[in-house]
Length: 513
Image 1 (cartoon, rainbow, N blue to C red):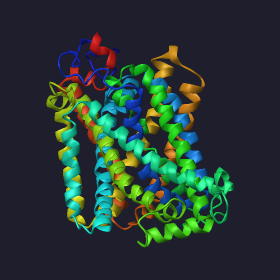
Image 2: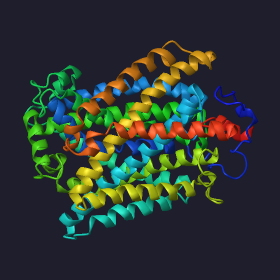
Image 3: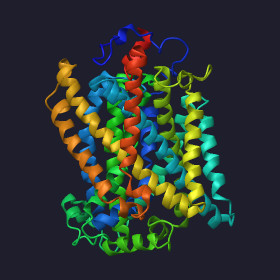
Image 4: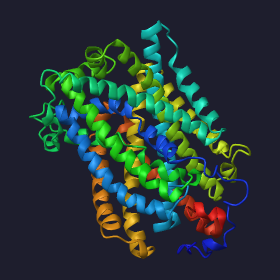
């Protein structure tokens, strides 16, 4: 390993924390299972039922075009990201990438912020799961089960799963993913085969240029193209998790490309198709009307009336079931990735070493899982005290928190893109490629920065709570958390140069070295 410029100790002189018993389950996940862990984090059914209406808010019937634009941008981002993942295979993901490029201070800032964002996202989706579980059970059986049971019960369940082999979690995520994909595709093909509704198949909704014509496409928030684009980007959060499972993958250097490209392009095709068919089913004006009805609380989802009309009530019931299971799978996917960040930092000794311990039988990061569970419990508990209603779980915990998580993740993705350029220009020149490691990351940086700008500009519209301090000062959270990570690194640089030099530096292949 290379010497860290900010430390007197070369990383090669550090006692390798990856030797011994505290290793994740090597070779436990094949490409398909890594894909399940990534795509389930993006939560296709939640993205369509939750983010879809937000996209229509900004782009009206042209929302499929917004998803096309996001697919192109994120595919370009993936090009450089995959090249870096092939060189830097570690459970730390972004944390390891930035540490190898820019050193330990920025690396530690990234680690703390990414851990925070993933766990906040897990807490946020807990609110979505609890809301739909509460509402659907009330509608189906008349059971008024308190929302706190679902909130705190799923947190305990998530933490419990971290005691078991990762393959158990991968199977659960895989089943949930297949189920929600089936529901979305049954609806979409039913609309396609019936030729759509009032406006036919509305092929012009696929033209990305129509996204910017917010008057002509009847967007609800006229002029708010940024809302549509942000909603589209939001729908992919989680796809970037593949490198975090490198240590547990059968072929860590080979699994990254298929996992990433299938996540990005596969999800893009699905999102565009589903939203196109929704617009076709309701018609251009009808799709906007349904969003207004959903926001007014008159219907549970814009998809439910169309599902009843084109397929039948049984599919609408399945939508209701799989939005619960899909949301739980999503919160568990984010939770698992947050645990791996904590585990990685604990194993390297930059956080308490207990976090770096694995279960003696299952080789799972169970201690990190308990700590992560406590954090999520506190975050959810704070929101529950603020608003204990089921609607509060959706519109406050499930809406405000993701804005914070997305802001941090998109900002770090932009920094990762810059890191890729620097890394291949200065430290891995043999892998430099004019497009893969230069042009693609430049485009990715610009677009990710723009997405963050859109988030902060429209945070009041996206949250529906522009005057709430949490939303007003949303930008403070990522900066403060990143700064805390940098301070930790600077303290270590003075107090323990060996640990400082190892921040984010240990790779999958170091296990065998």
